[in-house]
Image (cartoon, rainbow, N blue to C red):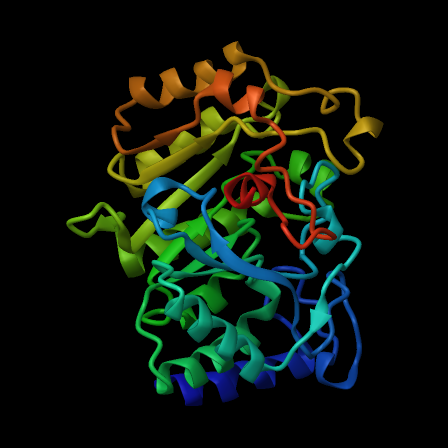
Length: 320
């Protein structure tokens, strides 16, 4: 199926929306809103060459990142809460999104990185159809919180080049408590299997830049609330130890985390290293870790402020 036909099929789904596991069945085309509160017309907060992603994603020219507004998760600790929960952003057309992609490609970005794309899949595919007709050739990155509908992921076969999902929880009870969502583990793991079946492990070009594959992000939280060890066991047993991992130490008690004492602190070096060592112990050899000490000493550089023209402070350091 070509992109134009797929776009039309996906657009019909929005009349009774089931693009994500909530399956709210609202008619977004007529302005009805479900759990995510998103309407029909896409909303974008910002777009830029992003230098703070994993090395094969950002490279030396940046990842062409488009931050979408709204989200199908309500994480109480979300560092992107200004756009995910407070809905900072502007309505755009699919032509606008296509133009943004082409502009980012012209600026030399290595890829087009869709952040929080799940609820906007139909609109993104339509925009991709337009952009590819007008010369878009760089890889696409599906940068998701991991609460995806596996049936929709299956429809993206040959559309997405690089999947970069979170595997945030190994307990659906924890996911419901801290992110307001049901059956996260089932949907997340089914989606990871589908992603891996489509693109396999991460493949890099001769310059170390990702061109295709799966990269799984694991956010270390206080007291390992997310249950990463169990997630690593799943990836090993159901996918492969060749899967590239990004084990992240950047947890910051943002948004409503202060209302949850167990979340209202940064992680310790011990908590982080415990996960890294476990991953190594069970055979994972590919991926990236964050240097805990340097990350904390520069903690503000990669904390976003979507109300500022320079979303990330590292951009200001580059321009000053």
